Amino acid sequence: MTTGKIKKVLIANRGEVALRIIRTVRELGLTAVAIYEKPDREAYFIRSADEAIMIGDGPRKDYLDIDRVIWAARKTNADAIHPGYGFLSENPDLSVACEEAGIIFIGPPPEAMRDLGNKVTARKIMERANIPLIPGTDNLWGTNEAIAFSRKYGYPLMLKASSGGGGRGIRKVLDETELLTQLPLARSEALSAFNDDGIYLEKCIEAPRHVEIQILADCHGNIIHLGSRDCSIQRRHQKLLEIAPAELPGEVLKSMYENAIRVVKEANYTNAGTVEFLVDSRTNEFWFMEVNTRLQVEHTITEALTLIDIVREQIRIAEGHVLDIPQERINMVGKAIQVRINAEDPQNNFMPEGGKIVEVYQSPGGPGVRLDGGVYQGFRIPTEYDSLMVKMTIRGYNWEQTIQRLKRALNDFLIVGPKTTIPFYLAICDEPDFKAGKFDTGYLDTHPEIFNYPETEREIAKLAGVIAEIHVRKTNPYAY
Image 1 (cartoon, rainbow, N blue to C red):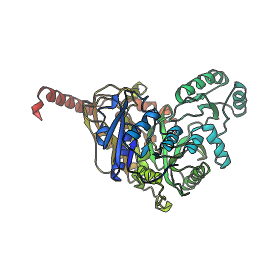
Image 2 (cartoon, one colour):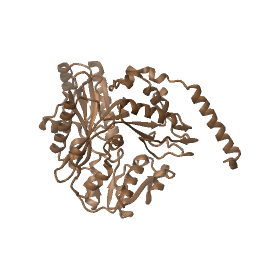
Image 3 (cartoon, helix red, strand yellow):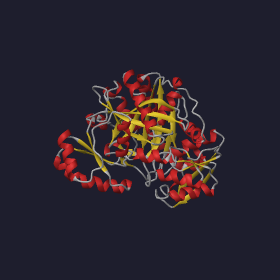
């Protein structure tokens, strides 16, 4: 794996994560290069980079084209590539291409990515390391082994893509008829989404908590954890709201940390990664779920509590430096919550609101408020990409203060144009179980009342005032 002093970093991504990486690259005194497809030509992250190069008309296909990314790195004389998350971030072929081109890849080695990216292979690694595993199968090639597994362990079961990720390629199966119907559909879906039709079965853990451990590992054998995150509140197996640290007994967290470090050692993993577990909400028993071999969307809540810049550490590890953060310095003081403010309508099955113009953008601030986004007033939300507009990370002294601060910041956050997830999160802030810290992966299903939020008189009045302001600006540009 190529290491050495980095001078210029190409960010092989877009949007808020590209902007987040650019900021750290520039803090380190390095040169940041942005790549972009034509639909992103007015995006804010391009303006923030030292250099920018268009790699194609898109949409999406050029961000996923390894040859185009390597071409852009060579064209701009970049000596390192950071993949961010999504797109090519967990594709070992990008790491291999970087090695062949003499470019430093800011991420794990391709062998570890390949082994951990395949969920069935990852399960075998966990077995060798004696990590707690949910009962599951190898890759399924026919119906007989699927039926045999179902009759041994009973329903419900989870049918999963072997190369899945990001909550995709997962189907819950309730009986044998459904199993036989879903098997060919799941195989076809996996092939379409991941270019791999491998699928497998796992016993379904009903309404668990989804807890993950952030890891840093250098190429000298040093490994530390950066605490825990609870990512249980999800829609369609995709995270909406994340919390750090997870509220679990100390001895349970200690065991999870030890298991996560053992996973990383067994897989010969380096750089930043996340080991994910499912936790029984009643007994606190936990099982290995997967390893995300990249920077996570929710890394900001870990940074808020540990004060460690994870991207900075990724770059230092990629240069070959020894990890110089002692484990005893990792103390997660207080609580942090991250919400993903998406251009979506939660009351309409989270339907994306792409194509809308952001007429007014007024962001919150104050103590303990961090924003990661690239949206601005007048910005057209692309229909070609995901609906994430901005991530808001809130830190407080304790759980109660963090929720209060989150609610205040959400009320201060004004986006006019698309519907957003802001009123949805405000409804969660007032929900009694959430305020009491009682939630699991079934939270949205068991709390449908959250979606019944009304537009309050205050909101209507605020919106009316904003619309009036827009009208004045359009009719009299000299009024301001």
